[in-house]
Length: 592
Image (cartoon, rainbow, N blue to C red):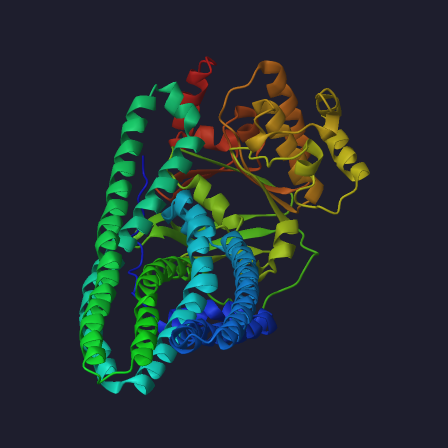
């Protein structure tokens, strides 16, 4: 199983440019974002204010035994707590709303980008990685937006306010606090590098897991057909082991990092209690000041473990964001100049000295020149790997030629507007892919605006109305995932109808090689003849009748055209086509 791809891009721990790009997605919601920032700043003041108020009430009226002032102080404290919690409730709500709004936009943009990526991208990147971009990677970006920045701002703001108040109360004890800062910095720096590497590995192995799962599900028939379940279970289990080990590495570092941060805070409080208590007993420090300082120092250090957790989440968000933006920035198509809007194509096609390399210096097609007049059928034949399907991919603009150009009525198809090209050139792929939905929905996939009457007319024109009508719910029959509820022949016929409804000038067809019963084969041939009638057609032919009826047979070998002509002319030439024909005829038991 191939679950690997090109290495994922390296992640940077905390990158300002990346952070700025993430938060550029909040611009459409600037009002909500700005209100949220205001609430965050207010809460950053409220949290230390609550702590300061507790110390003030305890060291003031309670310590002096004044019940009236104590009652007023407690009432004021309760009011402050209520206001603080209301502010917290709205801060949380706005953060969740902002995160969801950004994720909604980001997922739409990712999906739209995937739909426009060139075919070459999907040849390199496993499906599982694309699924990860839309799911786990976007979710960690959500965490970065709705949690990391705002929670960290509240905690850092609380620490700064607490530091200012401690400095006001006693600058010497505050110097003791400052002595702890270098130690915290060293601890954070040590674990930062290791956690960054560990989180990168977790994200990478998760992508491999999803890629393996997607490949196994797509190939389940092959797996079961070759009784490969146990072998695939072992391979997937090995991936799980690696992913689990990477997660355990994160757990090991985090389980030391966060408690160590908390232990540093506890150590400082112990030192503060010893030194401050000694000064209070010596009469050098007021007891009220010591109480306030203990509360404020606790507030100063309590955010440290929280900030450690947020730092870990920030690393994950950076990793996810970098992967997402790598997808959004991937394989941008080159500009082809002015786009031509045209709908009156006749169907004259020319491949002018085209070459196609899927990888550098590995050409699937080399200097191929081929032309077809409107209404002609071109049959492409040759051994597997000779370049037949590559020709079809160029005609459908799934790939851009490495050299040369594909012309439609003298216009380079690279310059034709995508909507116009889709109406001019229609393809029927070999796999007969159908989307979940009804038969009717699949037939009008290329023309969603087509009426029911137009759909039925196309089916009648193909002579397959009775086949569709015999389905359990006729045109409204659900085809299932990939058309699983239909037979192979029925799927091919629905694909024929889908192509005919577009009414293209050029038809690109890769005939299915799977065998069907003789009655279905006859109906397919009748429908195919109707489909090709009056259209320029390029067919990778596997049926003898299709090959014989073609106006021009192009014989491909090693990415080059080695012969072309009619069936009879090529047989008389006794070249490569004649040899292929003899092999084909022998396989069908037709003799010589």
